[in-house]
Length: 496
Ligand SMILES: [Zn+2]
Image (cartoon, rainbow, N blue to C red):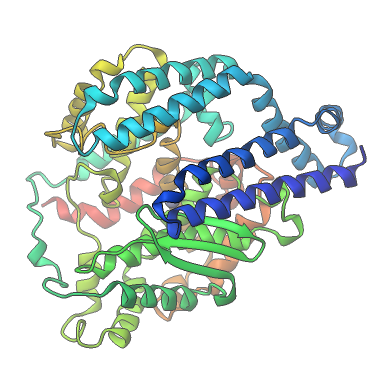
């Protein structure tokens, strides 16, 4: 095989991924419920085709040969060989009977979770979750690891991340965040919201969010924004990004900040180097780096005073009656309330990482085999009491709230907390280099901000590991310090 044929194959595999992404997007946005069975077959076929393409003997031979001769390759070719080998190696380690067993177990466990969560019935889902955890532990053994089986799983979502490196970082964040908590429980008073009693129809909220995205700089010919239950972004083609969001009719900020989060993901996808499109060199570095971009827009930029001022101007223009007697400062305090909540996806910027630390500690024990699934709800509740000083009274708002484990995704959660940490480190480097950033944001001029992200993150695609990318962009080792300083500066006054 020639190098040109290798690239033809990579682009073909990318096409298959994009078709699958389109099917998934449609499933979550437009597909009628009765389409589910056929869609599962269609997606299953796409998965098989990708598998067959990647494990084609001539491609495997080519990649194996050149992986050991990477010095003979250009830097970009070497990245593509290295990353394709990574995917192939993982597939080679997992035998067909494992894949089949895991896919059956995950589908049974997901259905059991969906049916028993509304009934708050952990006992009903326990046997299928036990099966999933058993398979996940088998997966770790099949993939291999040096220090801890959890590393093998972490590596799926965050290449090169290791438990012994990330756990101390996340525990440091958790300890310092707990010190920033208000001493007394803050009663959450919905009537204190500046929006209390106001109503925002869904279609007007989505129109507003589309205007906001264009004002930020997203090309209108290259994206769609549609409502869905669990928001996400799918990249369907080189200049085709589908953003989804959700809204609450009594609170427009829910839609605005969910949309900003997803927009951060979209801006990253738009900024990837077009000349490497369809190859790993042109793909996002990792899940945590992706999440750093969404959190940067949602929190560091979106929940800042300059952005709230810019947002307020747009809101007054599109909703003059609703925002007539309000101010940018009121918006800022509204979107920066801290509360001890049980639900991760509703958590504020300060407490969010605590939800992740809890999941990391539980995953570590589940994977080590020291925590039986039977004891999981009690262990979950005890950790919520310890870290968030609030105890779930049912499993619906406790251990059954997230779908991840029931879908076999163990090792995924840390990427969210690392994303926060990386976002803070990037934000602080960016502010050091661009001292006019606040003024630019307040004026709605995001061009310098996006240019900095492009030069320091986007252009590199998958060239570097997440840690190396952060090191290069910020001239510092990845650490929790910038994130903690940011949180302390923003939330410490609320202590009293
Ligand atoms: Zn995200």
